[in-house]
Image: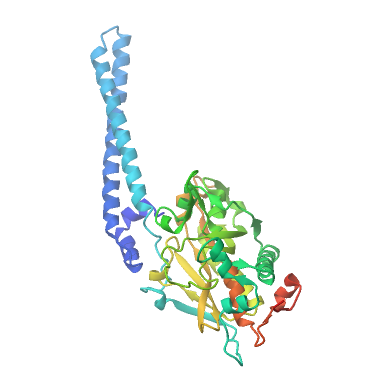
Length: 425
């Protein structure tokens, strides 16, 4: 959530940021109009309270002198009614302003390249080389079905499109990747493992920015008003909602494996086959709570932590900085990791690593107190996939496929899989 003070005092900056994001900016005038009215009403309340205090003193004086105070007591009652009405109006205006400001995305960092869409994203670095094949490489879904480790047809019978059954070595590969990633992040990168709920309330979804703007992308359990999480970012970030952390406790690093659920409402016709865009998928997430002055350095470290997974798996990938037009709603800056898919002859996103600065912390009211200083500040939050497990499995199938239909297991994974290759049983 944007700081209303920043919006009021730097209106032109906020409007310019929204233009760079290809977002409508007329809402800013509406918010400031509501805010000005709220300030006027607040001023009225203070003036009326001062009058009430004066009247109360006058009533006390009259009573002390034994005089009739009934007339002025009627005025005091009318003043109290005025204050009640004004306070109701204040709450109404605050709710209106909140409803509007929750729909405004974060302001991109000055270092984010300006661009209209993903075509203007900036490639920062490339790791490894493209694998070479003496045969025409297959798509991962054909490989998985050929090995009898992925079953899309029966998953469709059970649940519908965009679901898969992982079977045998396919199920073991997902489990092995989860353990490999969690062990790497907890043992070597300093993260604390979390196993959070996957059903969360409206406040949690609002805190991280999924609500109210993206409700159509979410799966909702209607009887209790709970939502299935689209990413572990939601429950893990909300661990510290409405809390004040100590400066000495920062930074806080968490990692979590969860299943994730997305309706993909805006992705009709995209990636209808395979593991790239599923309604249900597994993911390992990294989440950080840090001091404001450290957050962009922490973004670099988080991104390197995610990259390390790809490096150890020997996968060819690149890192791109998202431009303003491709930036996620809550993010101030994002790096995408894109892994090479030989059958498609293109890089595909496998991780997004983002710094949200104080945007989520304001929505979720996550603060910290500096040692020896008065008041509190909002923390900065960050998160990144490290990695999306289904997409990582798909990348392994495609990049390590063999002409005989088998798939070599990357060396780092062989201990977890108990074998060096997947063959058809």
